[in-house]
Length: 242
Length: 268
Image (cartoon, rainbow over all chains, first blue to last red; front, side, top):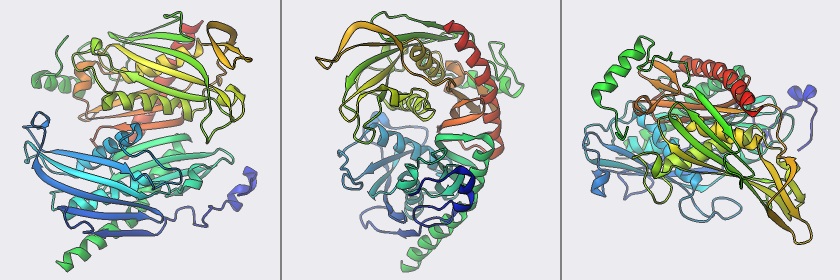
């Protein structure tokens, strides 16, 4: 990558993999990949591949964790040790606990499991190959797996990472872009939107003005349509197979 | 005060008050409780601070030691933020391995400081690839009456501002604990402050006390300085419309200006 002066950069700005700023990587989505699970799905943004399996509703164990008032959604995000270049120590980390919780929060507004009192719906997400945007791929896969499992839902959700590289907004970051150092560097904004266009999850790391953050959310809104189409197509396909 | 939950009746009344733009303690929805910041509260620490927001209290200490850099930042110092929500501070907290709330708190404060580049970590390199300073920021809750997040964020900034770098014995390659240089930790001029807005029903509020925090449906923590945003964390599941999100950013910008002044004043 070349170091550019910011004046010229708007014309010269090129993403490392040659995509247009608002272009997602190729989406691959498939439903029904784990026969044992009540619902399962794979969602990939290019090289970033996440799989999700849903088990439940089933009785929550241990019993003291049961909620007598409503069902519980429990998500567990995990990166496989070999999913990145330098091996990750297997097992939960502070990062993975946070992303698990974030995923739960992102999905809860659309999952209608109130009447499954004392029960739990488990969503297990594994990243088997990572090139950034893993939490977004995981959330997209989880939404599909929940739908596949027949869990009552208001709608799906769509998650996408919007980035600001130097001054330019881009959709669906790759690792090389997360580590962008030219100009203003990289700002990473994973966003999850419901079908109504409400924000169920947002995080941000980097440096950005209020105005540009707004543009980033609009871009996420635009891109979530493409993700929705891919999710819907995969869910329909599995419906036809049955 | 030892009650963990807000009763449904109280919750109902709080919501009614919020709808009228009022709170039990007479504050406006966008008004903080009194904030008291005191630095230098533990003399063996490189820097330390006690922050009280109303009855909420946290202690934050900065320690430093020389260690190896991370492989992906060979010429930069390290930053490690940890937090303990002590059982002594609330009946909600129990001893044992860190609960999610504590992990998230530390990670949110960490990211606000890291992403804003408030600590000039490149100036904390002693020998590239071999020895760098690690800055540990440790946060302890002393009394939880809501809004530990903002108290911790303010405490982290105040303790960093007040910290001195320990002496370093070059020959032995070790930190001389208990002796300090006259140098402060190299910090950027602009102070990034992490502040949180909560949503309850259709109301957006800042600085909830325990009762109010218990019924919070979602929260957004933003680390920013004068409208430039460095980190955001949305916690909890309730969705926000884009309009509400923009109101949150406006509230934070206003609160940030006020609290920045308070921090500056307390450090004089």
